[in-house]
Length: 468
Image 1 (spheres, helix red, strand yellow):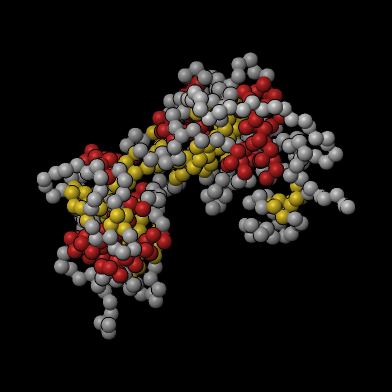
Image 2 (cartoon, rainbow, N blue to C red; image 1 turned 180 degrees about the horizontal axis):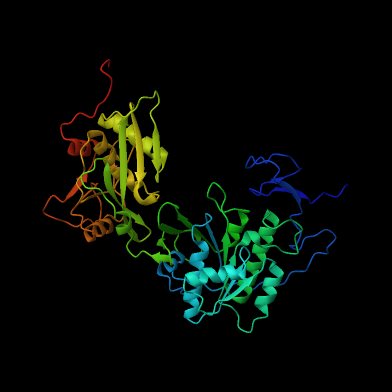
């Protein structure tokens, strides 16, 4: 019987494995990205190698003392919030983000803060020369710290240098993993094989020495972290640095975290001297509100344990096209279509002859269903031409039946609104943790149609044709 070949053909764009070479990848649809690869090369399974005898692994019971993972506090409060209280020693972290978003700036500021606290930090750059990194450090006023710097791309040379140091580093920054290459793979740097094996070698170093390794990762045009998806499973935490180049704010979000929550965010503001932490993001997103403008509603949202207020803007205008436009920035377009359908089916608000434009102010992106109520109010306000109260906050989830469902943390949302000067709130009926008051500052809505009547009053919102 012929020996089964262990050669595989892997797409360098999406890491899809094929049994034979072909011009177009079935996984991502890209052309000329498939290369021949031996998946067993460099991981102990090459042909002709005798099987290695294993060793006995000690077993432990589930019942026992729990030791809290030791952490390195970075002194950057927003970064520590996202990581769950600081970097865990011996962990591997993958930081992704678009080019120029500020990944290297954030890590350089964190490295300088840790160095001032007495930690031993090593910064390895594979994209820039030493002089270029020094220029950034000078701009960030981090050049006076004791951060050790190297410009190298060979993983074996980097690990040899780290092991030869007199004092083990507490934090190692690799910028970036796509530029690293190892002698155990024959492919070019940036390919699936090189990224996977380079990351594996660096993670092995972190686990064996207790040093924290932070690897910067490139992103694809879709916004996902480039390289094989297996790297995201290998590391302990995946952090995404988001933002829009036209806005000054940046958001740090944890997509995966074995040692902390994944629903916390850190907010930064890009300045000439580096990234500035934003302790109160609500003031940032509500800084340029227009008074008495129809179609604007303030949404009281939650990001992890932090309440966040952001303005939702809607514009409803008659269309001259057969198919009306639906443009959304910062929210789910399918969710907007559902809100429009509910307004038409249960509230008699027909938007079929109107273009609908929806925007989340400041470039912020909302993924919480609690924004349904604020979006619906903004649409009704724009269609009726009536401005909503500027001191009112809205939150609640809308069901397909037209009812408004309660959302968690209603009390925290209202407290954040009161802190910023908001005096009233529109929320679902039956919400918990709502402060009891004798006045009418809190309007608890059960049906969306009741809210339409409250906003529009007696104004007609049905714009169906006269023929009907």
